[in-house]
Image: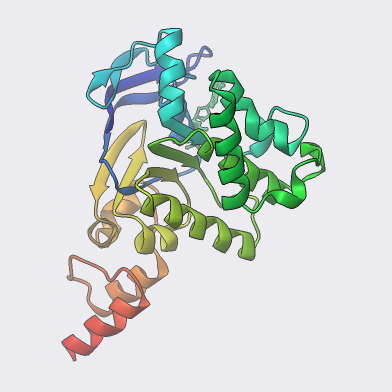
Amino acid sequence: MLQFYDIHYKYPNGQHVLNGLSLHVPLGKRCALIGHNGCGKTTLFLHANGLLQPNRGEVHWKGQKIDYKRQTLQNLRKEIGVVFQNPEHQLVAPTVMEELAFGLYNLRLEKDVIHKRLEKTIQDFALHPWLDKPVHHLSLGQKKWLSLASVMIMEPSLLILDEPTAYLDCLQIEQFLEKLNDIHQKGVTILLATHDLDFVLEWADVVFVMHSGQIVMEGEPAKVFAESEKLNQFQMGIPLLAKVWKSLFPVDGCVPCDVRQFIERLNVLN
Ligand code: ADP
């Protein structure tokens, strides 16, 4: 669906961040990108909607090379939605309602289409009580929720999220993740960066491990997290459940994905 081929990128200050990175996001899957702080996850995401362009390498969307012309990028941003880690970097309009409508007006959609999308999104994200509020009166968690709503109103087929649970409390995390599952079930492919390895093990279909500006491991989380020594070399730990399983069965090449599976497999082995 979205493919990065041999991407190299250095910031104007000369720092090389992406060093021949290749990554293919498979259609319809829940994908997680993990890697230590500063390894370049955000920089990679900025290449997905043209906010950055590679110095070398190619980004393909649905089999076509992205050419970074204005028109192509505008079309691309309809299809690839990016939710930044910090909602302050995303939200631009004075009120919640204007924020929701902002992207739709930019696309110059018909009035009745705009109206329908607004109605649906307000309903889906339960935004009625906030509509006339100034955006700067919202809490950080509420701003994050609004960021997601204002990206989803564009009806993207790929949703990219940079550390979606940052700034959220326990209840908001639950609500946010429930909404992501809902979005995925409606057919949207998801790629997110996170430090929450327990969540990745339970939630993701595919995990990509990033280190030194490259993807160094990828695959089903249950298999990737079984390789604790290799992950260690890339400054990555493993989820708690995987730690317990590895201490019980050190040579098993596939850790259980959740507590239910953990108990089932334990029962079988005993
Ligand atoms: P991650 O998202 O994995 O934490 P980032 O992509 O944010 O990593 O950053 C990767 C590296 O690029 C870091 O060393 C960071 O300091 C550097 N970096 C990020 N943005 C800029 C910028 N605008 N100019 C120069 N260096 C940057």
